Length: 179
Image (cartoon, rainbow, N blue to C red; front, side):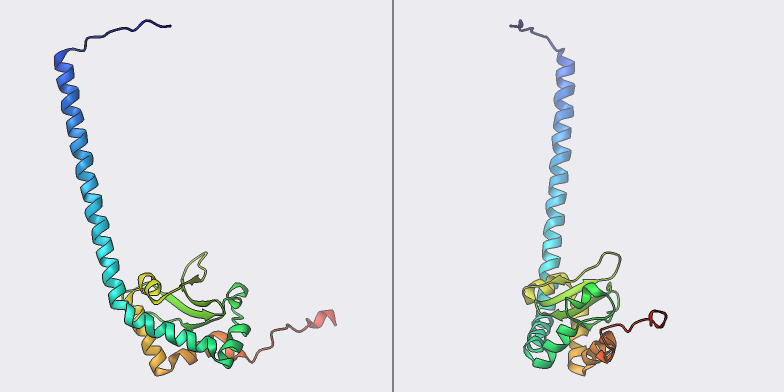
C-alpha cells in the first residue's frame, strides 16, 4: 500500500484557484442561462408557427385524406411519379410551389399518408402523422400558398405536371437496336 502524502498549497495559490473556479462557474451558469433563453425563444417561435399554420395544415390534411379515399386518387397514388423511381412508391406531389422568403418545400400524398419534402441532395419524403406535425415542419406561409392551390385547383395542374398526364406507358419499349 502506498503512503499518503500531505501537501501544503500556498494560500495565495488557493485564493487564485478559488477565484478562477468561481469565475469558471459563473461563466458556465451564464452560458446555461443563455442556452435556456434560446431554447425558450425557439419553443415560443415553434408554438407561434404551429398556431399560425395549424388552420392551413388542417385543411391540407383533410384534402389529402379525401384524395386518398377517392378511387381516382388511389389510382393516381398507385401510378405515382415517373420522375424519380423512389418517389413513385410515395405517391404524388400536389404542391411544388414556393412562398416568398421561405425555403422550397413540396407536399405530396401517398398510400401511407401526407408527406413533405425539402429540396437538395438526399432529400426524401417526410411523412406527417397530424396537422400539428405538418404545421411544425413547414412554415405557415408555404401552407397558406398550398391552401390557395387547393382552393384554386392549381393542385390538379401540379399533379398533372408531375405525373406527365399519366398517359405515358410505364413499361419502356425495347430499344430499336435490340430488335
